[in-house]
Amino acid sequence: MMAKPSVFATLTIKLKALAFKLLPQFLGLAMLVLIWEIIAEKNTSLPSPLLTLQEAIKLFSDPFYQNGPNDQGIGWNIYASLKRVAVGFGLAAAIGIPLGFMIGRFSFMAGMFNPIISLLKPVSPLAWLPIGLLVFKAAHPAAIWSIFICSIWPMVINTAIGVQRVPQDYMNVARVLNLSEWKILTRILLPSVLPYMLTGVRLAIGTAWLVIVAAEMLTGGVGIGFWVWDEWNNLNVPHIIIAIVVIGFVGLLLEQALVAMARAVTYEETGA
Image (tube, rainbow, N blue to C red; front, side):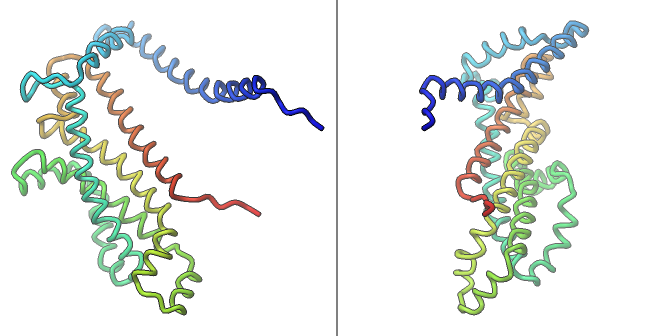
């Protein structure tokens, strides 16, 4: 009989595998910092990585301070942006996912909405911002409107595609069993469409986070986009770089959270 590996040997194997996985990521980040340092030495207007790190430590030592409506910590600005994204994205999901099911399920609905989607989907989300300002008369709901209009299309399209790709055999069985439309939705369509639907949700959240930064630059108020623009007006370049990193990190967290959710509620087909 073969002897089982010891605990130390197993731990060593796991550590080597982890190091092999993390090493390329570490090298990539190190290369980025090195390029940044080289450019900063050539261009004195660009702060070095060390100076930016020092500013970041100061900034995050008190991220939730408040010195008035236009002077708040970066934590409050991130929170304000996330609230806008949550509202706009939530409204888009509440409308877009059911609409996608109807478009995929009924050819009449597909014929009605496909031309509208084809016409409006290519429009830049920021092009809708003036319409939001005109209708809502305020920057906050106009920003939410921009998030809504950019988030709804991936969810509608991916959900509709998922419904259309449900095997016809499933629908034939439902017809033979004379299942109600509600049972068809809950027992056949929803489990089959879930991977497509979550893909649309993941695409939508990334787009929503991109749009809110640009929308806040234009509308002002509290938010990470407005904070970037305000720091540019103050010529505080280290804070702008910190904001870029924060925006990317938050976007990564949002996407990874949805990826984890997708893995938890879907399954992978395995070969025999």
